[in-house]
Image 1: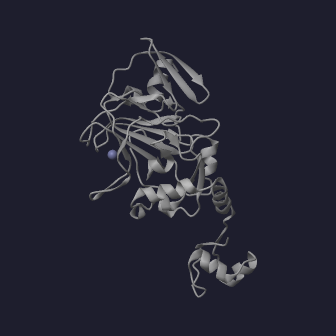
Image 2: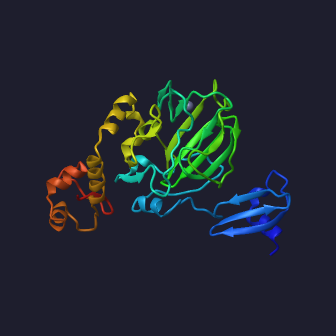
Length: 318
Ligand SMILES: [Zn+2]
């Protein structure tokens, strides 16, 4: 197959809506590809048919959960994964030895927090920059979305990071990256602006996990310009936005956790055990089998000992 045909067959998204320069050569680097064009420009294409799983650590962190991983360059977010249905906590690291970089997107005061704003929830924070200020990528990752968004974000870039978190940079005036491009913490994403549904120059910054927003201030201390903790426990309460009122108290709690408390939370989440109810099961038989008591099982699951068990129902044992 000629290389030109190869480029058109395997890179259809390069061919839509723009006149494509002729490809001169294609270089394969593992799963990635670099296409060189006759006009001396080039495109770095991260793994074709990329499934969105960034690395083994990300795969391991969600093993045993029902979370579905996707990779879409045209979709800002969806709520296919309901994080409020998480049964166990997920432990991820905001940075690790392989991807240790971190940068504040722009050194500016927060003008609006992650909270109810009027009748709508504000799923990010606003940082008070000026149009033309450089916006930096917070962590190492791969650009998933980078274009104008008509739903209100304006010029928007979304980057997926190696732990599965994604960061959103909205209302930009200029985009510097393209989808599927690798980017490192501290590299420029674009220039700040006032595009989309925005009333004044600012950066709207979001952090999402499997498309579900998390308060960025839970992860980043914007005043100090540093991460609150390298450990990040993802649990369903983070996604219960109805319970998020004043954010200050919540940060105080997160800050006051000692490394021992975090280790204990991780240990407990790993020690949890579940039993799927089969025909003939009873609470008494389950208590015997797992060397526990009916009372314990009832309190773990918030049920009474007279509850009728349904086949296929999952009950926590430990
Ligand atoms: Zn905002």
